[in-house]
Length: 57
Image: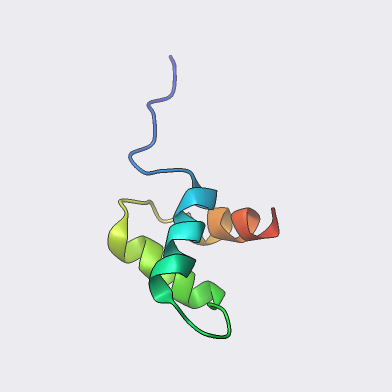
């Protein structure tokens, strides 16, 4: 049975959008990016793990 497609963009795209939207002068924290993603996209509970991996890449 094939997996259903995600209801959100790729995490790398969401991170770029979050950093652009937050417009913080000295960069955005991981917590701020996570809060933005949770507030603006339909993501599951494992967002922290996926976000950490996306930031590493």
